[in-house]
Image 1 (cartoon, rainbow over the protein chains, first blue to last red):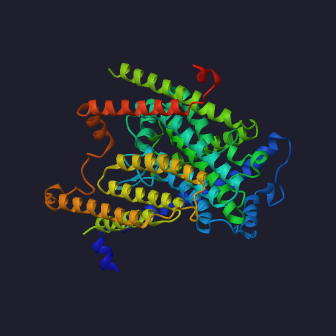
Image 2: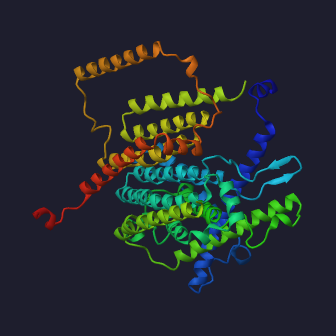
Image 3: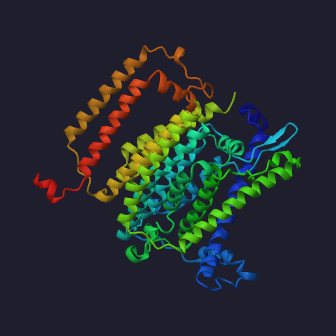
Length: 353
Length: 173
């Protein structure tokens, strides 16, 4: 065995470091997603002047565990006329694509102690943000396969709605992102963050770009006001109508993980990532471990704020009609983001001359 | 010895197997899914050659956009195994013949090709990185690049015109 390892020239410590990092990020995603479901119900209760879940544990803090347990122990039904393999593949794909995007996000400042350097990022690759886009565009398949393989007309309709919505909103999302990339001149997530630490957050220069990106993120996550794939009144339950037990749980859970990851992406792209505003925290002389932990918690604070905004919007704004959704995407957001991109390009050229 | 050859063989097997399954699958939805798997394997090859941009764009454009449209069409047409038309025996024979001819041409073309000197650099080289690629595209190849983007624009306008709803006013004129 050791001979093999030697032959393959694998750096064991490198692999171990990445495995631990990946495992902790996945664990974190699950944990945050779990408690976002709880926060959703609590915030909804707060906005509607109710108490919300308060039976399981103090303040209902164990409610997500109870919900998860319920989903696990429910009877699992696979419809006879469905395509069995694809029926199982659908939720798995939705979950996998939701989790993969977390690889390129820098979760905190690197831990630098003498010669050892541990980046709090699974892969700091040259194409950085393009990976996020690649995976987001593949994320459509989870919904489409699930909806189609259920062999149910409502599921199929909802899946097609969801897919066309996601494909349409990827365009303005990418265009608004180009404006950010024009300013940083790099697609590397770590460089996008360090550029913001030096020159100020992108939200100051790209407010319109951020608003477009945020609206598109809402649509990509199928959140209200764009949750048309799950419009109960029109489509019974949506693309996961035939699903039960934990497969349904995977679909619902993937939505919350998507919310978490897209919050992290927005914080990284527009709100300086793990940067603390107005101060130069690297000059404080903190110990490396404390410094990394602090930067990580700063990013998490931003992420939690965005998650709150997601929930806040859900319980405030009613659902769009389908034609309104498409018109907003194609006739308003795309021209707006194009104009935003052109202005940014012209200004960048003018100022850097 | 490093891990690259193993990844290469894994990706090659995956690409070829998925491509074969794509052709032989009876169910068109399975065919689309196998084709997506092929695209992923090819993207893996691009990454091995350090052509990261190509890899990402291959996934975004082909796997993420074009195949979604394919899937759309196939799902809405509701093609099933039963509805697949039985092909003529002669048609099959001619198809095999044509495919064999193509194979022959490719073998003949590659037989004399100088492969040693054109061996790809694995994992090194910066030609596939975004900065280098962008500079090349916008300096040396700017004219072909702009012409092809014009072509895309015209295709887009054409699609928009075809897709436009015909109102009574436009029908009259």
